[in-house]
Amino acid sequence: MNLFLEVSLPKHRNGDKIEAMKVRKAYKFELRPDGEQRRSLARFAGCCRWLWNSQMALREDTILSAQSVGAKPDWNHMNYVATTAELARWKRYDVPWLKEAPSQMLQQTLKDFETAWNRCYKGLAKRPRFKKKGQPVGLRFPQGFRLEEGNRRVMLPKLGWMRYRKSRDIEGTLKNITLRQECGRWYMSVQTEMEVEEPIHPCPEKSTGIDRGITHFAALADGTMIDGPNAMKSRSKQLARLQRQLARKKKFSKNWHEQKQRISKLHTRIARVRADHLHKTSRIICNNHAIVVIEDLKVINMSASAKGDTDQHGKNVKAKSGLNRSILDQGWSEFARQLDYKLTWNGGSLVEVPAHHTSQRCSCCGHVEAENRDGKKFLCLSCGHADDADVNAAKNIMADGLSVAACRGYRFSGPSKQEPAEGATLTA
Image 1 (cartoon, rainbow, N blue to C red):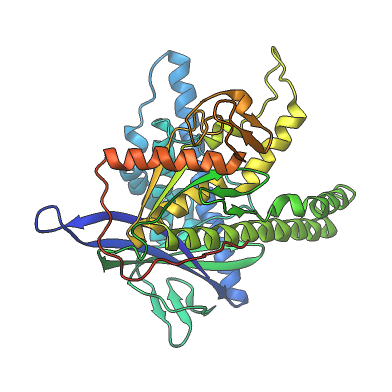
Image 2: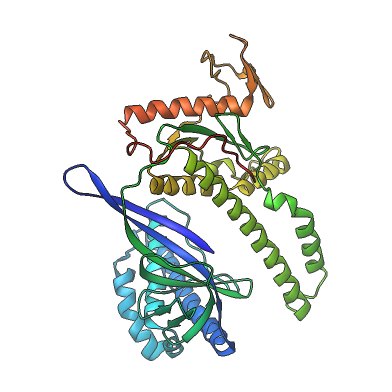
């Protein structure tokens, strides 16, 4: 099992010609620790969780103290460099059991918290939250590890050699290893970095627009309709039944914990079904189109709650809640992220355009009117053009995107290495 992470900026040589770029990947494998290693991993996770929560409490106390005197919080005494220096004192005097965990793992936890807090401070993300026992905690080893692919084992500091289930070969230079627990099982993500030649897309003349929806996961400009798996919706009754069974059990009893484990396994199953569909669909689209155009959707705003507050209650809260659930079940943001880096790897480009009037504008004459669209049907009141509403929107999205690409001076990587794939089909 593999999980792709990111692509760095292309490397420029000899003027503006791009000859190579660095690509980072993460390969995910299931670990097979023994009993002692499992207990050590649980202790390491507890150390990292305590360190995260202590930093969170320190930041909140600083904010409250500054607000009480009407001043701005001073973050200089609690940045990553300062807290890393304090870590040695904590391990020696205040919290001696932190010595059980590898030092670099604790330092990586402080670094992750600093990154999360800075993103919140800059307005790019919400404020970090406290971590409670049972939630996944990432344990990262930046160095000091060894990997033997032939023997299917990995050596980690203070854990020793550990077996893993090898599903594919690892390519590139090893950068770090991150461990994470999911439903009682431990997995490792091995991040690698490699330098590849400038990619040339196999279908440089093909482009498409994609209109993301709920009834159909996506509609392409050529009329292809892609149905989504609706991973959460198709298992909502099973999930509700398990949650009712949990409510009837004594809290924190053995049966209660077993039922919680069944619910966690179902949620993991739902997430994996959704991820599998997104990876397969995005890969087929990227292999057959050099330019892909999508709408620049603000999913976080589209899926916001309509409950309102105590002074002004919201309207149609239940209907909006169902719509939010359906939007999040599709995975629109993750789909756009995968299209972005996979097109970059293939030598293509992803273009985002504003979503204004794409579903109300005629793709033939350009007439814009709200009455043009009637549910899933589109009928232009000006020229009489009839089409599926989602396909018409996808055509408008593609036209807008090609105009943006032309204004940016976009050029394809070069001549096609092979003939474009004809009759490509998408299955979900």
